[in-house]
Image (cartoon, rainbow, N blue to C red; front, top):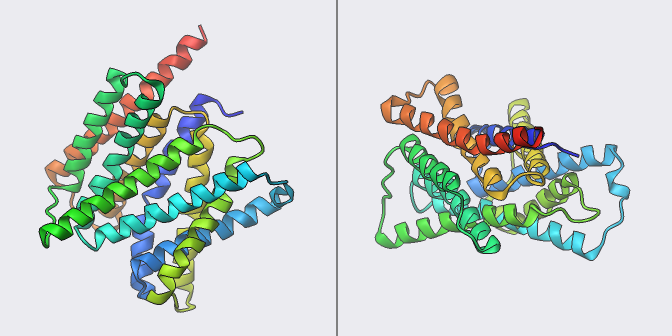
Amino acid sequence: MLTSSRSSLLLAAAGVLWGTGGLAGALLQEQAHLDPLAVAAYRLLLGGGLATAGYAVHGGLRQRWSLPMARRVLVVGSLLAIFQTAYYAAISQISVSLATLITIGSVPLFVAVATAARDRRWPRPTVVLTICVALAGLALLCGAPVAAGSPWSKAVGVSLSLCAGAGFATMTMINRPALAGLSSAAVTTFGLLTGGLLLLPFALPLGMGVPLSAGVLGTAVFLGAVPTAIAYGAYFAGLRHAQPVVAALSVLLEPLTATVLSVILLGDRLGVAGTLGAVLLCAALALNYLPARRERVLATR
C-alpha cells in the first residue's frame, strides 16, 4: 500500500511530467502539421496503447471485469475526452494563456467546492489560502491575458475552459475512492484508450496522417509515454491515498514546469511578474504539502 509521502511524490511527478506535454504536443503539431484535436487524439491513443503494453506484461489483461469496473473506466475515458476537447476548443476562441489560466485555476476550486459540499463543512483556512496564493501565482505566470474577438467568442472560450476544468475535477473526485478489483493501472490503460477512441470521430475529419520520420515518431512516442501514460498512471496511483484538493493542486506543477522548460530550451524570458508568479506557485505547493507532512509526523509520535 502507498504511504502518504509516496502518494505526494507520485502526484508531484504527474504534475511535472504533464508540463512536458505542451512542448511535445506543439512540436508534434508543427512536425506533422496536425490540428490540435488530432494531437490530443494521438496523445490519448498512444498513451493508452503504451499503457496496455505495460499492463499486459504484468498479466493485467487476464483480470475479470464487473459492470461497476467497466462503468468507471468508461466515465474516466469520457472525462478525459471532454477535458481535451473543451480545452483545445477554448484555445480556438480565446488566447492560450487565458484558457490555461481558467482551466488549470478552476480545477482546485471545483474540487474544493465539491469536497466541501460532500463533507458538509467549509474548507480549512489553509486550503483557502493555498488556492488563493496558487491562483495569484498562476495569473502572474500566465501574464495578463486578453481575449481577442467578439464578446460571444470570449464567453464561449471562458465557458469551454471552465468545462475543461470541471471535467478534470470530476475525474479527480470520481477516482479518489478505490473500486474493488480495479487498479489504478487499469484505470490509466483503459481510460486513455476509451478517451482516444471517443475523440477519433472528431479528429479524423481534420486529418491524422503523419510523416513516418524518426523525428515525428519519436515525438509522438514521447508524448504518449511521458506526459500521458506515465503521468496519468502516477496521478491515479497517488490520488487514492491523498485528499482530493491536495491532488488537484498538483496540476499547478504543469504550467510551472512548462514555463521552466520554455526558459531553458526555448530561451523565453520570464520577467519580474512571471518570476513572482513562479515563486507564489512554489509557495502554494509548499502550503499544500505541509499539512499532510504535519499529519504524518503527528501520527508517528
